[in-house]
Length: 102
Image 1 (tube, helix red, strand yellow):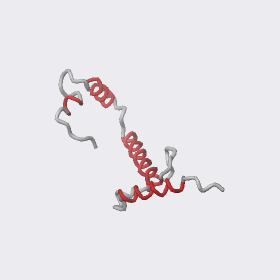
Image 2 (cartoon, rainbow, N blue to C red):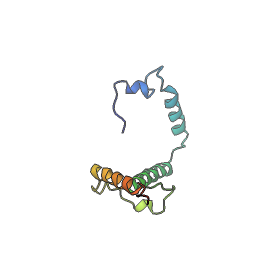
Image 3 (cartoon, helix red, strand yellow):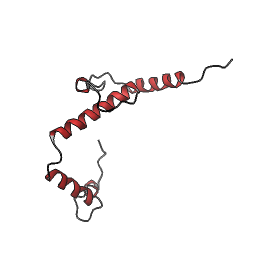
Image 4 (cartoon, rainbow, N blue to C red):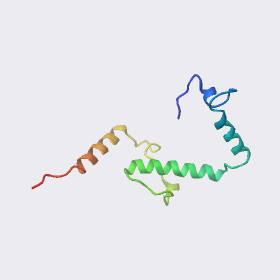
């Protein structure tokens, strides 16, 4: 989620002459033409879930991921911990260190 800003309406092109006006015009024309569908929303959701899974596994995944519709992120299951991320990163850095030569 983006932080709220005092000049948010201007940035989003909701005020005449704003720098975001071309972006707003593009969104309006795209949505008016029906380019975004429920299927588009499904793909965005699947992509987001794939990003969560990729972060949890610490791996790069190829989209689309089979079975992603059944995946429940740790955040939603209330099993996510910022400290766990730090611990995993430390463990990976230790595992990737070269061993003693001899």
